[in-house]
Image (cartoon, rainbow, N blue to C red; front, side, top):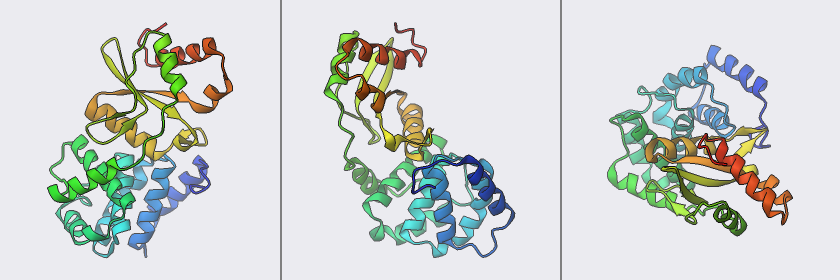
Length: 251
């Protein structure tokens, strides 16, 4: 279901119940695959992640670089604190596998590092590894902003900045300021949701940008926008509705 980009809440719930009751024989790969699947689909089962923390902690020694990164990222998405898992032993294992992390996995570790900042914990990646992961995260290509969206924002009295890179490495399609509030504009295409539910990547991005950089989000529905064609009046109304959802009093 995760690979197919489909959300099936009841199925995820039943699997979680079974896992919570019995984790005998789990390997580090089993744990990594499971939490990764839930995180990607945006299925945040607090009880499941809490239950798996001790199992994952006991298996850190056998984790591959991929396992480490996937588990770290999944817990960052879930926002379930797990000090028994993310401790000095976890950091030491990351250092042992430092040369094995792929581009994707370094990006995941950067987001985990940001999560620790959100939690104000005392656990962080060592500076050298943290910087490497940050620079790798920056290399992720941003989604191109549609020129007509910028034009219509200007038409309703909002002066947007184009593609913006936040201090923590997140790309925004545009950044605007309304009534003193910083708002990131994001094109909401199919990669941002599964079965009408936000994906883990979207959940994590929005939460970390809001918590660490005090930037809210306005999502412009890509399909709806394209259906409006050249109707500028309706496009402008679509944007107004997006801002009204933030209760900024924009008309």
